[in-house]
Amino acid sequence: IDFDARAAPKRLRLVGASVETYLLERSRVTRQAEGERNYHIFYQLLAGASAAERQRWRLLPAASAPYVSGCVSVPTLDDAAGYAEFCEALGTFDAKAEEREALFLCLSALLHLGDVDFSEASSPVRGGGPQVEPVDPARLQV
Image (cartoon, rainbow, N blue to C red):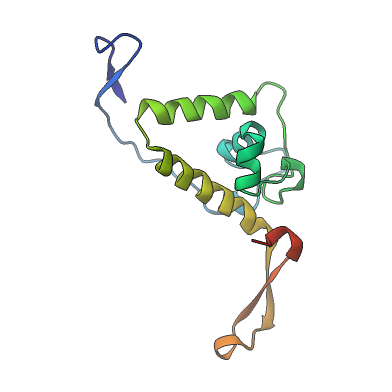
């Protein structure tokens, strides 16, 4: 990403960017190798979201969230500061409030999928297929 620092004081202007291929492994969302963490944004969201945001997005503490409960903290990382920096970066790109909300709702939804269990039992709905059950129905109440 290239910025023009000669823009208005304390305001950078985006002037260009290049895209590199970066593999985002889907399997990494649901399981990590021992000692590894999931995507950093999940930990940053759980550590840095305000009380109102946590309530609005129904976020649990990281230790209770199945997809991130393994390696929750790293002594050299400040996840709450990372969240604040990420939010600031969204502002730099002029992301609208509703766009930010949609982004964090999607991230929260991914975390909530850790509270859903898929079983081999056949479901009576639509002629069979895998059964989907909440791990803890109370945690998925809307």
